[in-house]
Image 1: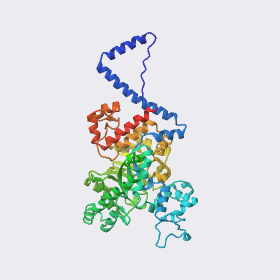
Image 2: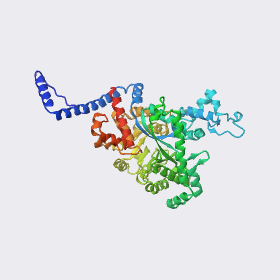
Image 3: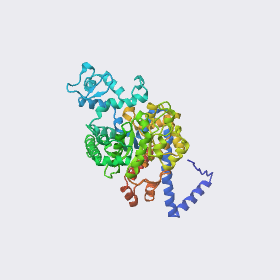
Image 4: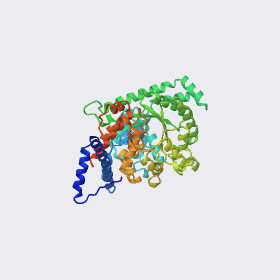
Length: 532
């Protein structure tokens, strides 16, 4: 920021001061403009002072983390609910539900009719609560803690964890929500989009079961018609009920509505229906149809869908193009639904060179994804610079997950494309991905951005604002220009004063969930920056 300094020498100072004061006081309009300019200058200087304080802490990571713990974070847009839970919680829930643990593989098992059998290496999971060695082994097996000692690559160890702790997630969605939002609130997150399978039941995923019944004939139109005639709508009904039931449990655990309510109650939550890209094609298509139906329903808190599971898996690689064509066909049929796609969560050596050349491009150009998760291999794509420019033109956001990119792919520091995305004007935002498995949380992702990527405070503040700008939540934006953060006309004066005073702005915020969250974020930044 340029600073213009007026230097007045000697006795000319008093004369100059009188001249300035007489001019200001003689013109009420000029006085109001001067007051407004002073207010704006104060806001800018608060931001700059905060940025300078941030830079002064770079040599002290503990102090820098304390700063970032208190910094407003906006939204976490890439968060897998099952991967967000810490292993310690899963151990407790497995114990509560009488599950068995295979002490060789560290995988949970439902108890057979004869019960868990310690003699065959399958004691009750509750054994771990009195056995610190087993307890630690389960944490290491179910997370990236000490993964270097596992004998596996980071990639394989990461993806193997889900199959091991999976049974602990059964019928626990409400508890999982409570943990996720409580942690988000402690990290000053206002908004969460959580990926999950809405229509999962104790007997299987409803949409997948209907998909298996119908099959996949290679024609999306005829397959969709057969799904409809075989009751695919029931999967969406199940999904809505499951989420409502889970939120009731979450609200009870956090005491929402009571005086002692957990701050997590104030975190706004929306859901992304996940589609298992490694499943059979008929299951993938049926899950897509259900996700689109839920996200298209104005009464549903599901706002979009995403493809999950390892992008380099056999089925994922083999069927990628077909899955993009499925999305291309379904998107126009569900105009309210949003799409964010895992794409480019790959690195050289994970797949052959040709496998790095098309996932982001096809996700953007064919499936018309509005956001991309990870996007690590962007510079290996065909015509990468043209693709970057196209993503910037379309405002396709990239959800940046630094910890998981490092742990799973070994991509960090200068090898990470974050700086390239920013250079080309592609919107980006930091996200946690699987904070429980990674043993991380949102503030540590910001710390990694500062240490590993060299980002400064204003850059991270910009990313935080953009996390809400590109969130899949209803309503118009607070910003008429999201690049320069120029407010809509109704709220120009209110933003300048950082005080909600006009009826026009109040009415605008009342009509937009997104703008209301964005206003709250600006209030939090204003309060946060005043400290420095």
